[in-house]
Every structure is written in structure tokens, then in C-alpha cells.
Amino acid sequence: MALFKRRPAGKPGEWYYCLVHHAVEEGPQCRAADRMGPYGTREEAAHAMETSRERNEEWRNDPRWRDEGNETSG
Image (cartoon, rainbow, N blue to C red; front, side, top):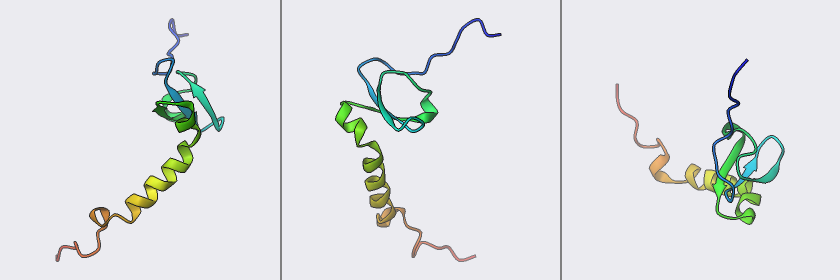
């Protein structure tokens, strides 16, 4: 049995979106692997999934991240 219980990293006043509970949480409530953030406000955390989808789409369409035309002959 562990002598010390590990607490999730984070500080009160930081906002997170929990991927397990699908909820906004303040401070370190869930483990880091299960949350997105930190965000500066509750509102930003509430839109975490939408922000993530938008960023993924931007990256998907960014020519700097595409391999097209950059194939090496071998």
C-alpha cells in the first residue's frame, strides 16, 4: 500500500475539460491523461472539444504538415 497518494498535477484557478466526465473542472480533479487544459477561463475549457476539432482541421489542411510533393526517391 502506498504511503502517499499521488494528486493530479495542476493548481486551483486553472480550468480543465475532463474527457472522462465530459465536464469542466477547476484545479486538479482528474488525472492529467484524462483532461485537456489548463485554460484561462471556465468558458475556454467548456469549448475545449470544439477548439480541438478546429485546430485539428487547420493542421490537417496546413501545407507545411502534408507529405504531398515531399516524397524522396529511393
